[in-house]
Image 1 (cartoon, helix red, strand yellow):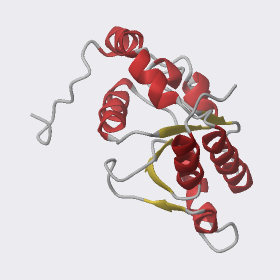
Image 2 (cartoon, rainbow, N blue to C red):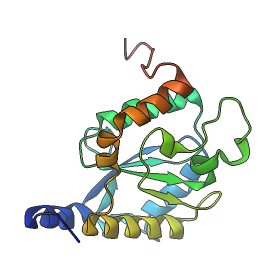
Image 3 (cartoon, one colour):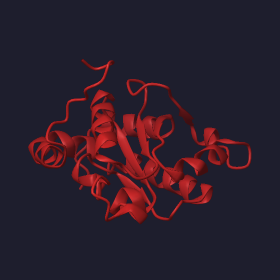
Length: 178
């Protein structure tokens, strides 16, 4: 049974039709993103558009494999996004490391570190699959099922332990974050 209030249902309807995305292009999945934005597939007709900063974005797209060094920045970026926020993992790399699954520095199972609302299968997923995933995410938002951001808050200690186990520390050390 749906326990959301009437206002939450209305907000979810509106959220599902105006989603701004931040794409973190770490691998070959990023190649399929520009065709999804151009006139043939035109994701803007769905109410989706790219954003430059995490503070303005609703959707976080992880489009390839992640190294431990990159994962640290992904976590940092995810935590800077405002709630509600949604994560889509592109291709097999975000699920199991893809062709780099046995590398010492490649992260397997992105959902151990941040909640993933939806995965897009394929190596690399085609624009048709990307748009289908966006439609699926929009439907999940309307139904109140895309709530990875709530799970992150509820299970923060579990996510943090996984992050620390793989990274040692999550703090980003560079000239912009110290």
